[in-house]
Length: 526
Image (cartoon, rainbow, N blue to C red; front, side, top):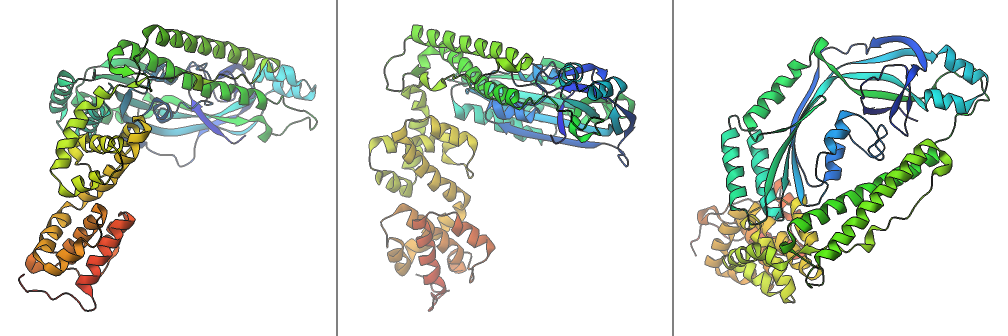
């Protein structure tokens, strides 16, 4: 096993044995040696960042809590970070903004480790069962000192757009000194006018201390920036342990075979992954029961509360069985078995159509303000596709310039027959918005220049026209407002690469007309 980093648990010491299955440090030393700080490790390594996270599994990874890290297969580990991670709702109706300060001081490791006398005796006597009971399957090679500070905004609600608005406001405030009061006002305004049960909570973790906090971003940022000083020198906390396999050490008994725990690890990891899925489904069902009126069955039929309650009970029962099986497996390899827990048999309700009505109405209006968008929507094959198209234009009024996991999540939540229209709208307006100046100028120049006007509609395709307008804005006559470029370059190539095939044809058509041969004359008023 390569050396691994696991969350520190109170009582851990360098040289102790460690059980990867349970996450427990053994009470007696397994190895001996001189403990020293890593040579040349002077000062602190400090990171401070702010990240939007769309799901609780990614949140756990950000916290350093993976399924197999330090006995965290089933939440066995007693470290404070596992406890902190479990304070969060597992449902898919929450997103998170993580403000994190990480401080690493010197790393203390054991130099030239050798087995302790007691461990050595068990090796010589060829007693692998007793060795594992006393010393686990690995040892603590070193401990990282410093500390971690987390402030996590958990934003919950039925509307992805409302959640994204708050998350982006927090992230913007992170980089703006004195933005705390403004952010508090924004959050209150968003929650007050919300129609999707929008709620915002802040969870703070400060090296072993967990608490709920108010929403004052200025106080959070002050704490985050002060934190490196608070854990400097002898005030540093141990927060990660380095774990190494015994096989790297010199063994006095070449015939000694360490007990193989791979099958136990595989079974526990399988149970851990399934448990995570069922925890998420459990909290989704709980949210749906709380806001029953917002949901319907995927086939559009009315929900039955008793059916959701029964499914919730079955999910909880499955989680309890997983816990029991994992506990037995971690203690006795003979009790390890792969059990089928089929999450696909549960049909999860979806947000009712009326939950999208606000996006739909706003999106339809936004589309009507753009003739190319109207043309593109009219080219779609059916009403479901057009509905998806309008929903996409309703998000942030169709003014975004970049794709992202939030948009992906909304698209994945739509009925299948609405998704293509949704994707088509994004493909259009993300490019349009990013090149809005060139689009506006190019259309103006083309409509005023007969040869360009004719070529612009060479294909009855909105993407072709969009590409043509961008090309005209770039290569068009400066006297008419164009940028007047005469050659391709990396920037223009990046724009061309972002277009659809039809958009590329439109762009290249405009470039060929302008640059020739023969090139389009300049300085002549239409």
